[in-house]
Image (cartoon, rainbow, N blue to C red; front, top):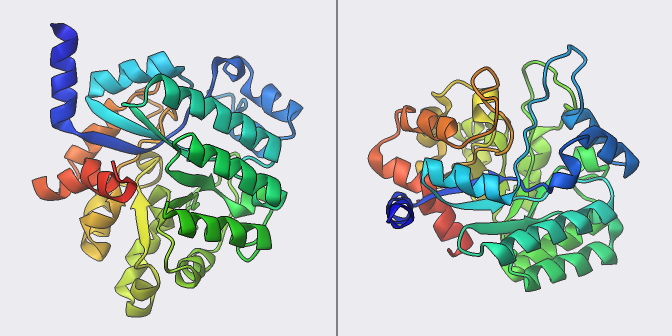
Length: 308
């Protein structure tokens, strides 16, 4: 009886988290060492021990732990994003991990594919395999960390494939101002604006509030360029005050915002020993969005965009 109540409550809540990550237990004990052994130096810097001795913000959870955390917070479904790995082989490995999670829990997970566009035909072939496995998007992609420019030919081919398949592409967008942190790589917001403008038939999701790029949509020319862009809220508590929800909704409309927790990242490090969904969701509820806007941000937009 208890499980039936949980399921019913979850379905009525309808929360879809559009930005999460899946990692297998094999990397939990020494993520930095695991990454260095595979040539993934950016991940090693992000997930490894901090120079100040503080615990890394990167948390970990296997599939069972993640499902339990989802149930506790009444999250209906999570979108598993790939990582912006530097090596094609790591992308293939990660896609296989996510495909297994999809097979095991198809009613709870969707997935976007990792890709290293510099791998050319091999990258496209793996994307086709992920599509056959039920993946519904591409990303998270971060050109500056993966070593390619926005006009890289291999990247252009990935975008052409995504357009043909009618699936969205998620890009990591770092904030242009603020404190440095381990693994930070600067990028130009103009490059992201140009990307959206030159590929108007691709639906983009710019992660982490796109470095507040949507606020620049108050400029009419920028607003026109970003017509095909959605913004996810991943890691929001680490970056911005809660009023960012109201500000961005006023600038571009709540129908362009996708809730994302960045689970299993510990986005409330002073409060979280282990990652959870409850705290990020509580922040959204107090953000000043109306009930109608909350329904869009917490599931309605993702359900429409991903065809769920």
